[in-house]
Length: 103
Image (tube, rainbow, N blue to C red; front, side, top):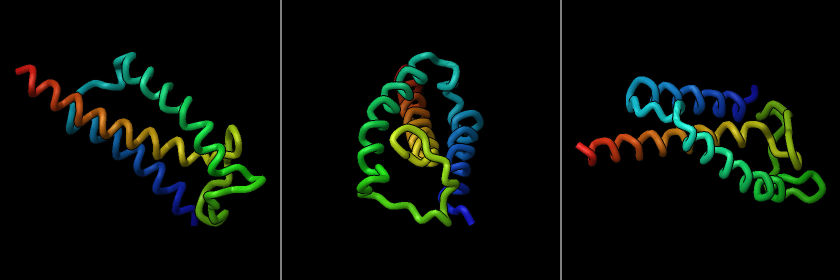
């Protein structure tokens, strides 16, 4: 069972549902959101790459719990999914608070 993969996909789905149907901030339609995601990924790659490098990993993933799909510097794809979910949820809340303050 790929618990880490299932959790990552569930986190992404829940953060999207949370944004679209609960917070309704329309952040996914704003270029600022995607620029933020790009900036985060650009910093995540070297940091996560260093933590998960196969030559001397600091963080080791049980191969039975994740998909095995690794992208730059052997970073599990699930790490990017969790990052997206976290940033989406936080920015959804932030946008809702900003809208409330503007009223």
